[in-house]
Image: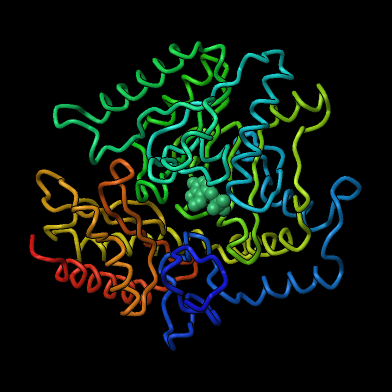
Length: 447
Ligand code: PLP
């Protein structure tokens, strides 16, 4: 091992990513790979987009940093104006930070402060969902239901958080249940959790509209989010929607909640906001939440040295302008439909493919040993990692995850190509992915 960087795997040095152009990354193995998942659903414009690079350069030449205690900056102001144009869903203000985890922390703290300033200081409980992910900092991890990522840190996670079931129809809806009955059961479970905690004590319910890495692109059933919103409203709790992975156009609408018929009080965003050109995340905040604090103490009791960073904001502003001006959401919808069709044609009847699911350019394949029982593979086989390596060998980067069911059992792999992907490239992605899946399964030791 040569690297002095603490890599994710301390027993192997990864290749160096040397350069990127469009949907391709060139690396120190001499390979040029299709970035079929934009990293972790980040690189929404692909790599090296000239307009984004020019905007960053222009901002760098003007000013790289000024502290927000004294100054605001043009790029962050313009980004807020653009993202909040027309106040979508009543969201009126933007708070900018440097990652998805930081943004979740800001959302949790803002929800807490809102209630205190609203004369309800007893509201200190948060309800989240199992098998969810909201970030790796301690507050965000306490909110997260990702059992695998939580396990080691359980003793130091705050106990202000509890978890209810996700809406995961593929595994959790019983054969005897209709979709509506399943949604009603989940609503009853959330209601029961409010009652257990005392509804007057709950600050917020937090959920991913499309569950990202942990479950693998799981959309909710129709009516689910409306039912969750109604419960929050009935009890005076806020609804926080975490769109770090599924937001900013990834599912074909700018915000994933637009397809659910509800709007959040606080929305968490990150990956697609800046497309990986700079580390940036943020929260979009409803007018009534901002008003409570403006009319109360007048200040959000939170802050970071690099919040609303001028260069990060300039990069995100350029990314957001390109998405709008080039009407890329139309391409997300069209290429997403093609990706679904081709994945289904290639793998839909495969005996080890249990489910192909997603929305827009955000798709996952979940693997099973047996389609009827939906039994997962032995976790020690690390099937998702095998698919990743086989895909890489074939010139495709994808995003694998284990522990789909409970943090230990289950495997899925995500494809989330950049919004600029072409039909021909979608064909290549599915071709390479299908071959990789077959090679990975073919290479498993005999059962
Ligand atoms: N929330 C969701 C839904 C995510 O998918 C992630 C990251 O994958 C995060 C929060 C945390 O974001 P970050 O890794 O930028 O801290």
